[in-house]
Image 1 (spheres, rainbow, N blue to C red):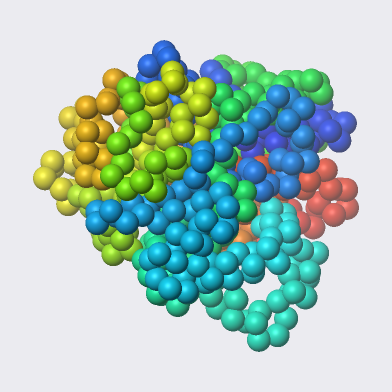
Image 2 (spheres, rainbow, N blue to C red):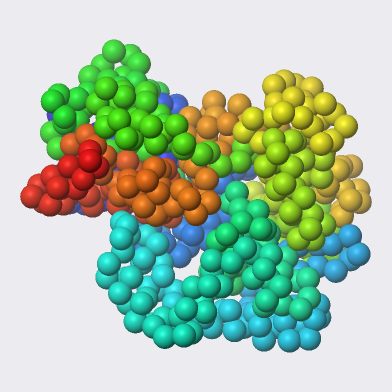
Amino acid sequence: MPDAVVIGAGPNGLVAANLLVDAGWSVEVLEAQEEPGGAVRSDRGVHPDYVSDLFSAFYPLAAASPVLAGLDLAAEGLRWSHAPRVLAHPLPDGRCAVLERRLEDTCAGLERFAEGDGPSWAALHRTWGRLEPDLLRALFTPFPPIRAGLRLAARLRGPEGLRLARSLALPVRRLGEEEFAGAGGRLLLAGNALHADLAPEAAGSGGFGWLMSMLGQSHGFPVPVGGAGALTAALVNRLRRRGGVLRCGQRVTSVVIRGDTAVGVGTAGGETVEARRAVLADTSAPALYRELVGEQHLPSRLVRDLERFQWDFATFKVDWALTGPVPWEAQGAIGAGTVHLADGVDGLTRFAAQIASDRVPDEPFVLFGQMTTADPGRSPAGTESAWAYTHVPQHVTSDAGPDGITGRWDRREQEAMADRVEHQVERLAPGFRSLIAARRVLAPPTLQAMNANLHGGAVNNGTTALHQQTVFRPTPGTGRPETPVKHLYLASAAAHPGGGVHGAPGANAARAALRPRALRSPLHRAQRM
């Protein structure tokens, strides 16, 4: 019997398991899929000569994460690679906002959009440099982040701190308007905000856009050499080398509860795996509470709050094997690992408004990844392994485009949406479609089938909006990994601090499980109130 059972071998589950074995616990990880990794996996399914990342691809949060740094995954063979440029946002008129590797180059490019915008970007980066260590510690520790929070408060005391807090609470459209005279800086902030489900007019989207932009400026958007699966392989190798057990193809169907305490799990194969000390769940919050635990074991308040739980946008993804580099008209997009495609901030607003009204966007905002540009070994020399994703509503009521997409996502609808995405690329890179040797379409139901945590293709395990963050994540009053069931911990992106590959939810859950019993019991009781 292991000390702990971890449900799910995504990055958070694997981080949690690694920290537990480091503390001397015996750990067994059960994964429903036939391979580990969750949304951090790669394959050669598009073309045998091309490595494609199935889900996530670029990892600025991983590069900055003190959690992953503490695991020393380089010792397990993990190496990172960078594209020559971090990110680009080309426009139909030929201009291109570029987040360069060097701060001076980013500033020079923004200065060409409007005088003074280069110094404005540099000022945002100086603020980041002053706050980064304590801010990241605050983000990646359990809520409330007392020590890091006190250090941040000391740095931000006085009028300047209040002004910064105001700026980070702004919608990203307003933040961009206040900081930049030209379109370039505004585009970089707003496009990065839409890496989550935050419209340009959403409160707090300015803070998220600033965070992602500054991470890109200071750490880049790196990729694991050889594919996203290399990050998972490093976590798995480390776990096994320290005595942890990973079993794939083992779908957990229940948490075994005796009294009010989790004592193990049951699997679809009829096996019961007991745990001496803890069960940690790298699952969505609705799946954990409704399917694995059952409402009879939960306080009525939590059951009611789950009715208000909000998923983030659904995701639609296309992978390509290209016979040559993407023929971007804007030179700034050449050499960029990530390319944002939308006709300005207004185009981003229009896109987000269509999703908010449950309509499939007719001109989708496209996040485009040039993986061979970022990691030359992903495909043969002179070719490109590429992908793009966009967002669609969780529940489709109509199609803003001409194809009559209903959200059934049958073959016809998948092909129509993939063509729509390709059209957005073709507008800014004429001849792109002639380079396609093979493509793969991953619609929302496909993504969910490949990883149950991606409900309807939701990649962040719940909305990033302010009403479902910190103490409100996943429901009000449940901002910590403890659950109402003793010895059961939520270890997924459904818990604070949320989505992204950084390992913090798994680390927080592991630390909570390791906390002395005298401290754990009051926290579990608080969750039941």
